[in-house]
Length: 427
Ligand SMILES: Nc1nc2c(ncn2[C@@H]2O[C@H](COP(=O)(O)OP(=O)(O)OP(=O)(O)O)[C@@H](O)[C@H]2O)c(=O)[nH]1
Ligand SMILES: [Mg+2]
Image (cartoon, rainbow, N blue to C red; front, side, top):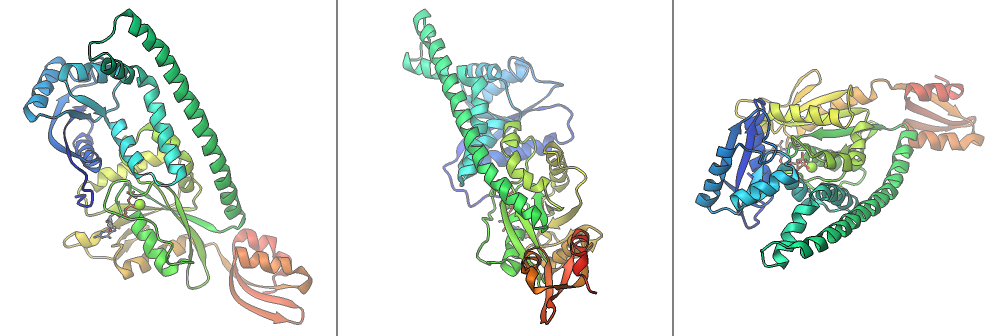
């Protein structure tokens, strides 16, 4: 599936608890995909039906034995768990199986860390990583102490030194988190200024959302290439999980002088770690501030209903509810017997590679975004030139004519603009 990621493959076992969640089977598939995206190769999986994890060891006693045998049989050094584990669960399982235990959260954080490109994305991921490490410090410290003392573990003296070091480590990490927060706030305030500016411009915001690898960036690029201000301002698109980690905003100018801003954001996955959601909340605010959401769905993946459920859940988590949304079933070209483009109300079936699909998509977006616009003719006296420039920036100008009484514009206005410029409207 991810043939473009040719990292040396580390063999791993994946494990999970089946708590009668209808999404469980899918989550294990997803976990295997995530592992693969992180340069691992899944050689086997072990699952156990349990209401809730065993506090000390996650799995029940017998299953831990089975896991130990599987680790030896497959000769793997790493086991990846489908849930976020407590520090003691990790420690105990490591002791009992002899393998390194990585939980789902650490795995996702690892992938995000390897994908992060911009300063902001790096800071956000780094903060989530440090927050994940903080309660787990003792574990990593123990490992380091064991290494220093030749694996024997310490007597009283080294433990005492360890406690002090633990405190120092904790303080260092807390300090790092504080510094990162500060820098994030600085970058964000710049972004907020930009966003506020856009809102003032009364230009509509449309945001692409959906499961990772659904085709959001590809659709963005199709629109940028055809209607963007600068067709080379495309974004990174690739067949991999979490190709996009930062929001990109592009202005789309449709032929009849109607423009909107389109934003592309980080893709979703189930059980996205809370630290990460929190760290990316500002990035995801782009979606929260939109006038319209375009949910992109990979229609060629048999698990697409689960992916849609995950998207709905994540949107709820970041506080995006009751937002007008168009659902776009993408990659229809990969499905046999599916005709596209096709439309049923606010639901589309498309292929991002197909021009007619993009045309249909643009039509539907237009209907949503510009349906409350009305055309008017305004006459602006020459001594009020600033209003002409305001309109040029904020509204779609359909025609301009210079008469002896001033500049006469044919414009497309929002209801608010109709009110604001009422005194200049002549027709
Ligand atoms: N065949 C086919 N491939 C598509 C289509 N749309 C996107 N793809 C491919 O799907 C892969 C993922 O596309 P992206 O646009 O990067 O997906 P994304 O939703 O932005 O993913 P993230 O940024 O990881 O959340 C790329 O290899 C695209 O070329 C489509 O309609 N048909
Ligand atoms: Mg993307």
